[in-house]
Image (tube, rainbow, N blue to C red; front, side):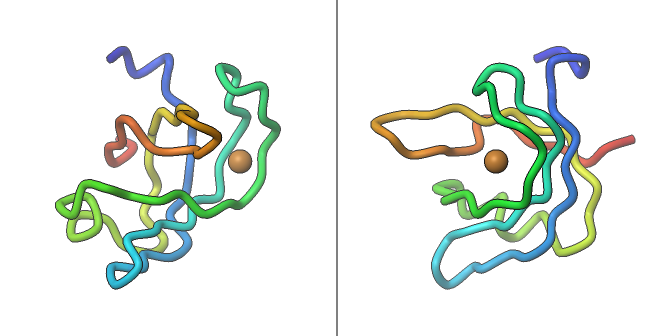
Length: 77
Ligand SMILES: [Cu+2]
């Protein structure tokens, strides 16, 4: 995954119990979505342990069966 194709984001909240992450994100061109703060369900428990509020990230989101989810995420350099 090229860094250039990833959207900018900032983790605002990590909800490990409910497996959700709130991310303030820039424009998501692949989803035609403007910048906003939204909650993503996170299936990968490791991600919930790795990231914390205020982390600046680069990430990719997709939509499956009407649900948005994060397919790739890493700390912004
Ligand atoms: Cu959004």
